[in-house]
Image 1 (cartoon, rainbow, N blue to C red):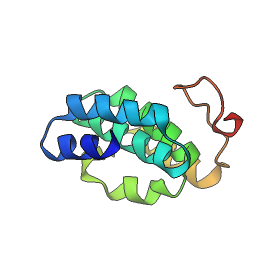
Image 2: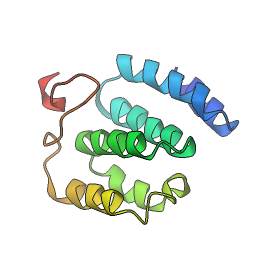
Image 3: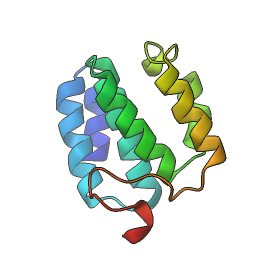
Length: 113
């Protein structure tokens, strides 16, 4: 699932990759869950779905705030980098505890798993 998503994304197939990352997310735990969400954000960004990309970024960073450094330099987020929402998400990740964001995929906070 996850590795298939990575391969599909590398092949320029973000829609197909998104389906694989969503499957991976359903079975993931810990950092793999954050990684799945990170890649879901990339897929949405490549597909021009900015709001979905930003939401996936929020949740990924709630699970693993250290991803903020990688997100800042990831070319896949270049179109989002100039937006206020993008900057606010990264700023919040640096100042909030990991369980401060609600996970829209489960409707529970990440610490309630």
